[in-house]
Amino acid sequence: MIRNIYRLGVVCAILCPALMARAQRTHLALTPPMGWNDWYRYRCKVTEAIVQANALAMVKSGMKDAGYTYVNIDDCWQGRRDAKGFIHPNSRFPNMKALGDYIHSLGLKFGIYSSPGPKTCAGYEGSYGHEKQDAETYARWGVDFVKYDWCSASKVYSPDQMQTAYRKMHEAILSTGRPMVFSLCQYGLQAVWQWGASVGGNMWRTTADIGGDGYERVMFYGLQQNGLGKFAGPGHWNDPDILQIGLGHLTHDEELSQMSLWCLLAAPLLAGNDLTHMSQATREILTNPDVIAVDQDPKGIEGHLISQEGPLEIWAKPLEDGSVAVGMFNLSLSKVPMTVRFKDVGMPNAVEVRNLWARKNLGVFRGAFPAEAPRHGVVLIKLQPR
Ligand code: GAL
Image 1: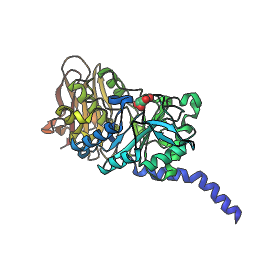
Image 2: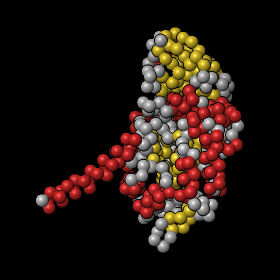
Image 3: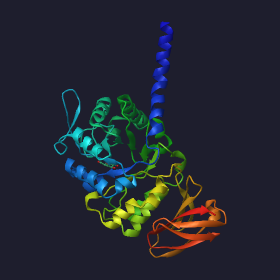
Image 4: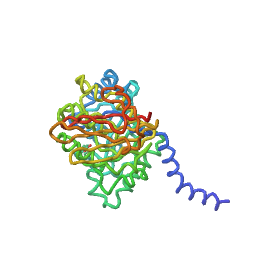
């Protein structure tokens, strides 16, 4: 009898965390998470008031209605640990529980940030040695999303311990019983896409930081995603980093390019701009329902490169209803005619074409669709067999 109980215990110790992880994965992030992250706009100047104002603006601007949900605080919120080792926020965040309640009262979800190392990238308290306590604290504050950023973890873990370090926090989160999206951030090291889901990741950064440099860097990282699609799907996504839209580094056509590419990639859509002062153009790019539907397609297939001719690239993403979204990207410095042949994207000869940015049906085309893509721009269409 005792032996059997012991055996059961051993089996459960092995299987239960895996089963719990699986159960949690089955209902979290079924489509790529959408929300906002403060880092690129506010860095370490972020405050409770800034987060509250952006959360409210997410509702008022129509972003919530468009599907944006997570309000994520990045680095620099941490204060000191108390005598028992529990983390407290710094003076810029007087009451995290109240902030979480406020975000929830708007019908939104609350995200936070930490590191598996002793310090975060900006030098604040990390979770090393306090994983369980931190997860418990986040659960008490009502946290729904944890970004876990490698940073100083390289000082305390060897590279082959990386997966263990991430699994440790995931298990700590699971043991709280509160569902939290687990977002791995380690800049794509060690081909994270191959193991991110197995350590509990709902998304994992596949690249270094995308911010600050403009179009070349955004497209370099975005187009580098080709081939990673087989590792992503409902519950676990490749994450090429935060949207740069509305931050002032991209032209209008360049912003359309990033949004189009991220949606074709089924990437998490985390806006990085000041939502309280958005231009109409920025708002329209972030909230276009036809374009967001490509990203949020329930099938969760990541798009891939169909053809490349120098700086001209055509990408396609199959959608649940049998249609295909196609992006024709022109990375060159002048406008260029581009053509997508329907057979190249698995379509029959006769196809109904819809322009997704204009939200207009363009009629039935046979064999191919010719278009003109602007300099650093994109033509984003949806092809439906006739
Ligand atoms: C970087 C991370 C950024 C941001 C920053 C905060 O390592 O890639 O997304 O979180 O740290 O210090």
